[in-house]
Length: 150
Image 1 (spheres, helix red, strand yellow):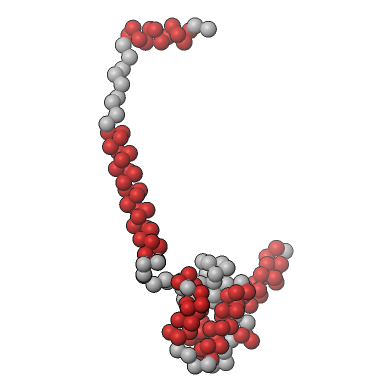
Image 2 (tube, rainbow, N blue to C red; image 1 turned 135 degrees about the vertical axis):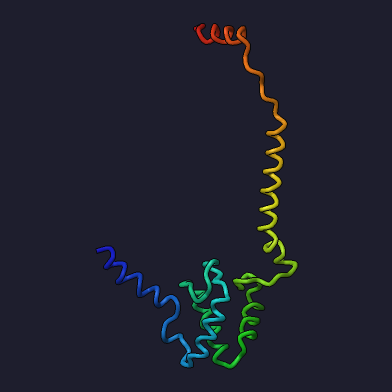
């Protein structure tokens, strides 16, 4: 029963999320180009999906904007630059390397270096520890008396 409900409600809505037939361009080449551009642009609501994969209203608006510009004859680069100028580097799924995005690109290296440094420090600390000598017979007897006392 649940599978039937899923098939009736969720599956059609997923098909509509990626583009309604009425929103698609009549020219297949232009539509393919618009989809290619859309796969490079981030949905700013979902943040981990392209505008082609997102169901958000903002993504739908951006898809419509991209298709309008492609249909008007703009090049793919011009459409990308237009959206990038309006929304900044965050809208690009592959942001350019510049002084603003450098920390983003350097973060994995910084995290790995920090982890390696932490491991080295922990090993040095553990290597410098003195292992206590085993208890003598007198110390064991004294400890046994302490454990027996109420």
